[in-house]
Image (cartoon, rainbow, N blue to C red; front, side, top):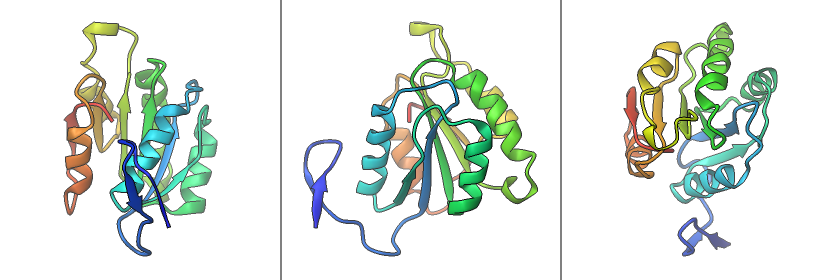
Length: 160
């Protein structure tokens, strides 16, 4: 069985047991879904199993879905520019849960409303508890490199 990739090429279905189980989500105020579909396809193309829980995800739902699916990593995407505010609150809630405190969680996309100014959110989001931050404007190269690392390390990079 094959399907289309984000670049429009055909790829085989992922092999069973390859890659990580990745939970994809947005922040609670972000109703955009195209970014989540793109991330799902990108992650699947890279051999990961993806659980996409959709847009406008309340913190409590993210926590319960993390427990339900037991992911190896959570990828949070923001398009509306409130990723910094919502993400900072959300990661605090997640890190307060003893069983989820060490779960790798990355965030990326449009994290603020400063438009072209962009940037500047990474250090504070890392301090709040994110494992990696990928701010809008750099493409997905840093995110891909992060995912391809055998044991991803903390990073502040380009867009997810």
